[in-house]
Image (cartoon, rainbow over all chains, first blue to last red; front, side, top):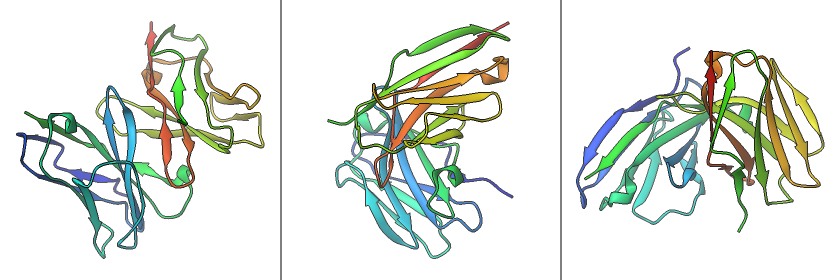
Length: 113
Length: 110
């Protein structure tokens, strides 16, 4: 069974640009959660999608948005990039509602110059 | 505000010794906790979980202890191996997402 796939794995952007990251869940997983990981703040929850609907949202500005497609693949978008957006962006997918059934992808490393 | 934090940023242990990683939480209403392991270049991996109606839970070479009185969580790894070298996070269920601690880096030396 293939794991969670995130693309691209590495990305370099400049301030003011926008970026789109993709997460392909494990087959059968309908929930996709996104997290931002930085050395200073650790892992912080961005949002969660289930069946194309955003169910929950963390405390991030509106520049961070996401969506989920009918095949459960999810994208997150960050507009007007800031230096502080440099981070590892992780997605986690699950079939149900148990965290012990949730699997993380390897992440996308975003660097904003 | 509510937070989940770790006592030590780094821990170095010798191969074969037992490791103990600690975590403090501040939300007394939290009823579900998880420990994750994150190896370099990978996403976090679920290790073990515990609910607030339990004090202890054991897995394969790992034990999680929960002390609700002092709001403290610990992860014990028995007979630590080189493959255990990683960053370990505790996390609490906020009801709709996980709140993660900052992480402890475990280094296993030969």
